[in-house]
Amino acid sequence: MILHARFANNKTDHEGANSMKRTEIIIETERLLVRSKRPSMDAWCSACGERVSILTPTEAAQILSTTTRDIYRRIEAGEVHSIDSPAGALFICTRSLPDARAYGEL
Image (tube, rainbow, N blue to C red):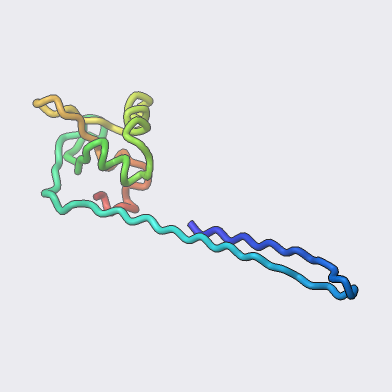
């Protein structure tokens, strides 16, 4: 995100000449997402009808720049596919993520 703000203040000095004071503020931020090189996991997604790459809700939230709470909301709304492991862990089908192809199918 880059934010530029400029403020100009025109004043007339005691001799009638104009002087200008200018303040410029520049804020630059950058976001970096580092994903660990864990072995990729895949599982059967019944909604897609095929084996797909899967992520934890936390990983999906990081990729979509959102919260895990939002990921759970999307699961409940049927916007993303979820897969329950036999051990009870919840995973997200990467093909169901918005713009999954932009992420190289993760």
